[in-house]
Amino acid sequence: MARRLADEPELRRRLALERLSAAVCAELETAGLLDELPADYAAELRRARLEVLRRQLINEGLTVELTRLAGELQPVVLKGVHFARLLYPPGARSSVDIDLFCPRRLYDELRRRLARGGWLTREHGAYARRLYRTWVHLSWQKDDRSLEVHFDLVPPGRYRGYDELWANRRPLELESGRVYVPRLEDAALFALAHLAKEHLFERHLLWVLDLHRLAPLVDWATVKGNARRCGLERLYDFALAYLRRFPALRRRLPPGAILPADDYRFRLLKSTGGLQLRARLLGLLLCQSPARALTYGLSRLLWPLVRRAGERH
Image (cartoon, rainbow, N blue to C red; front, side):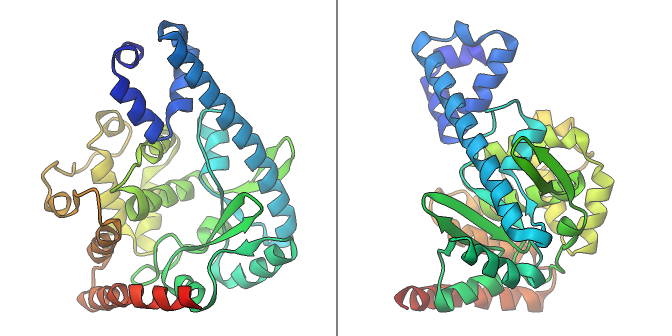
């Protein structure tokens, strides 16, 4: 990797776009190879890692603050703060915002507590109500800090909900206080769903790297059983078949099918534009029942009209 980075500016650009510069810096520093790069690029990687470390410490402090604000609701911390501590050296895992999970039945109370703490919702009116019914999270903001509160793994429909993500939580002690994180198998199922529903058709190598590092720590039979119980077995199979296209991941995941490069889904979805269309097609793929697929398709067709109406209000 050090040799290629020294010779290929395009690879450097791609890693920066994929938010992997800090992770590369950590790997090369550990191997004692960072100084073999051109001096200006080595300095750029060090700056990227320092910025990620600064953001990581800010996000950890903010997560502790949010956990205290939520009190006995004890929301679960997802992705960035959890994976940065569990899977990476300090300052190696880039993260922009905070992601929390709480069951839908607790969301209204959490919403009231966030509002009392000075947090403001980004979505309002009919648009927010529509998002709450049909999507997986709502967004919050306080000053320049961003928060996403998740209440589902994937949009409602054939999926039966997965409150175990919250029920199986465990404490994680940070320097600034205690937060709660998911059991590893629950974190893996969330990571698969997050990759498949939001990032599979755009920049996504950071989430692939998360799964590469998480895979040896996980009991994949338990993940598959959990996916089956909540109606996501097809998503589990699809996401793992995609991940097996990466040879390094193939050695870490259970054996199974590898999604071919010329699979018809990728011929349909390969364009760089139209991400919303691709997300709808993936939703249809996950609907096993024809009736639910029709309902999902109709709701997606009507969504732009509802969104515009909500934005006007």
